[in-house]
Length: 185
Image (tube, rainbow, N blue to C red; front, side):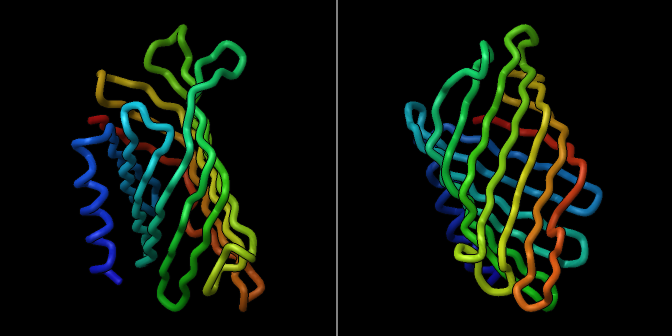
């Protein structure tokens, strides 16, 4: 399984010159996550690929596809996206995955240039889950500050949980307070 991810990541990186993109890295006490997002300069579609390594040899890979656009919440400029997140996770004796439906919103605060708040949520019921996963729920909230034109730092909270089909329980695949940085290019 290790080698099958390489062509997908290479394809995503090869599209970078024709598209706007960002790369982010975030850390919790128990995990590190890398994420690459690409979107055309005038496109209404965003594509993303990410990988999380969780302490104890748990690997989580995600593929994202969202329709995105600009809107406003109150008088605050907002970028919103609706779409799906494909997720595959592998632990020592268990593995699973899902196709979660959901979205995200990035709210900018004009009175404090560079400050924004992001929230995202994706849910996959049993019908969209496979292997050992019965359902998957993923939520993340964070506050970001753009330090320079093409870089920002952020802090927040991430929660990724799956119910287990055969074991009548659940696992928190990744959970915790996070900090990270994002670079735009």
